[in-house]
Length: 367
Image (cartoon, rainbow, N blue to C red):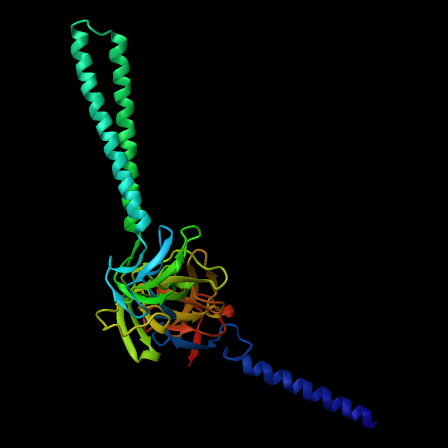
């Protein structure tokens, strides 16, 4: 009897619950009513604005950094520059022993002069034979032979003059000169050092501190944004110095290991009193084109997303309705995209229950 009483009580409770549920849905606003407003969270597009710059790090490099070698072998007779010296383009850094080279120049001069005199003699002979040929005193064959000898002598004179120019060039090469205005950072030879041309002996290292290149590594997603002429502000913390400049060059290839590309900013260090030093790290803000007035949103806020085509569909709250909005997008990372067109600051982007939304669906918004 007791078990039957309990069963009857449970059945009565179930019937009562069903009746209450039906009563709750009778006004059309209960949870089971598919036409009721859907509670959704929204975010204001203006609050999701992307930064108008890209942050990157980089290093300073000398625009010109050259190891100076000799073009001819020899023994160092004089050293004209030391480490730390500032040298002007063309100034002597070192001089090799010139004795053998001066002798070679004199020999080449004698050979060239001898060849010139031989040509002069054959020119006189050729002129005389031409005159005799007109009076039938010499044959055609004799005239042709002297003409051929004259051509050969002229060729030998040209070779002798080339040899003289080469000897003079080697003599000039015994003076090792600065390739540009810069500082000597390494002197690797002393008086008496024996220099070889093959393999070449390194004598000095000269760098240009007046002009430095700041090279930044920037993620490849920004390759379409960064262009020559973009404003850059670089902070060198170790030097307590901030420099404003412009992007001079963008390397169009991407490093597959780091998925970054290189942008180069050339800096006039002379105008900065040589305050910058090669090898110093800097933090840069690149005010790239196409970043201003864009919005960063998570991918999950989109009903549809086609990054290859550069478009996506999301929903904005228009009063108490959800409205589908197609926008232009760019990839940023695994979680986010950049909306480049299609949203205004006052737009309220729906950020929840996106899969359940359709255009025109009634919504109740929360923040």
